Amino acid sequence: MRDAVVVQNLGKRFRRYHLDRPGTLHEALLRGFKKLHPAEHFWGLHDVNFKVTAGSMVGVIGRNGAGKSTLLRLIGGVGRPDLGSIQVHGRVGALLNLGAGFHPELTGLENLYINGIIGGLTRREVESRLDAIVAFSELEDYMNSPLRAYSTGMQMRLAFSIAIHSQPDILLIDEVLAVGDLAFQRKCLERIAQVKAAGCAIILVSHDVGMIPELCEQAIWLRAGELAAYGPSAGVVAKYIAEADSEMHRTAPSPRHDLTPA
Image (tube, rainbow, N blue to C red; front, side, top):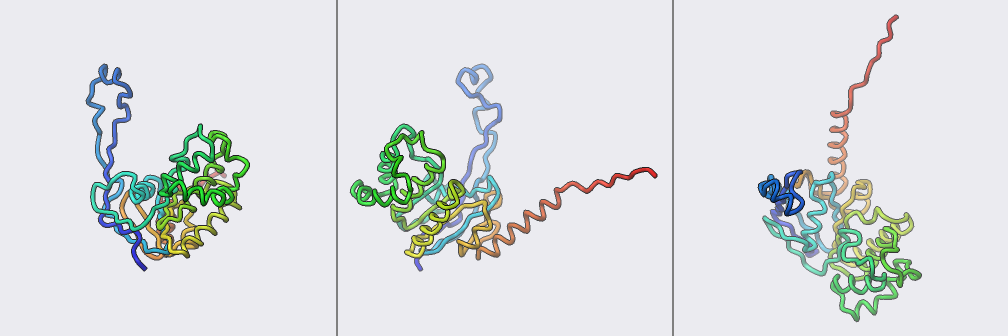
């Protein structure tokens, strides 16, 4: 199978500012401009290498702040790496930040058109897939309501339905499947399996490590921005869980032994 995504020596650097950084120009004038500058720089990702082939699914695991969402954003074209390269072959569909690109004052239908076009579809393609997108989202009765009236789960339904019907060659999913009811989650997973079978490459970020071996052939474990492990998903998840268990035992308080005088 051809490579859909190739990540080589990837590095992304960020700035960390002072906690008491002035928030306004007036504060800066009173307190000085020194703390407007970064306190330090740090690598959010460093020396990350992997490939994703067409028709395969790769899971990304790691603690909060490990660089998982940063990795998906860079693959999706949101920002540029400071080191290395990312090669993406095909149309990208992304569910990176629930509600990103949505406007709360526009209706669901208006947001559907806008996000479909942002996702790479022409207006004619959006119109030809409109009924299918709305039916999959199960939001027929709400499409003319403003998005601010939607629950988080309803927004997820609309966002997922738009992304999946854009027929992406590469689909990026960041935790959004954790939102919504169980029945719709299962429906999403069934559709993901269908697009994967049709040759779509999928990268899934999830804290539900039990889901990764079931869905993904390969897994990436990020630790503090670096590649801790990459390979068959069952083995990578087992290493991740073993380290988490080991750290939990090291940090657990020692049991107290209360001695009662005789």
